Length: 302
Ligand SMILES: Cc1ncc(C[n+]2csc(CCOP(=O)(O)OP(=O)(O)O)c2C)c(N)n1
Image: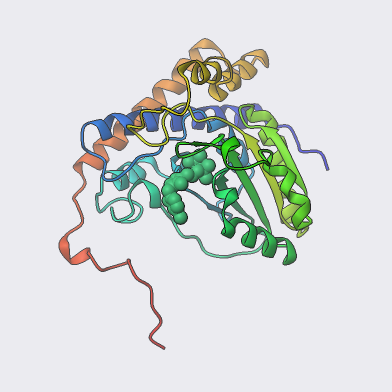
């Protein structure tokens, strides 16, 4: 079944969300350099063209699972950036009351009908046992899941080609008996279409799809990574020529949906929201010591 083309309104919303991820993370890196952010910070900059078009197909009641590189997933799914910033700052107004930090932002949702779950993971994760166990049982039980591999070609500081002979993760799908689809993760509209098909298939109860998005992170693995495993030229090749935010802008301009003025408006509005998020985080209290053991363990005494 063909995926319906997104409306102009939806495209502009996707574009603004891509900017929101980019500017939120630039701000988060700056705040980290100022010592305001608790714990490590892994940015998604360069990979905005994956989470945004995938999540554009999801309802509030659908689920996603995320990774250590999760700000993009949260923003794409509609998280409140003030609560996210507060979580990074370790404040009690954050999504996990300041106890999760950048890597464990979570907002649990109630189960309903017709929901799907999208699991985002990296190429590095695809070499680990839990990936295979999970995807196998998901296939056998025909779970309404879409496995989205963000293949950015590096696991921390290790190039993918040094640790696996199968660099096209989508090619693993026949081993589990599910469809595998590979798409250019720097092209948000191509991701939108491929994700639309996979999510619709999951909603129809036809089981999981393995969707591999070829992408590239523009910044280090985490903030402060000296990046000795790749060259400046390689980074420039991707960020200058294949930036998903620029590709989305070019598409919207060609389609007559985005003027220079609107573009500036979108970026200014997002920037203002991020400044407000920093103010919210900075003016929020830290959790008090009596919060230390709350919401941390779950146990059943029955
Ligand atoms: C069990 C375990 N081993 C090692 C690590 C350290 N570690 C953190 S991120 C990462 C690489 C992840 O690579 P990938 O799945 O490709 O995601 P990416 O960072 O490229 O988005 C590693 C090895 C970890 N967090 N957990």
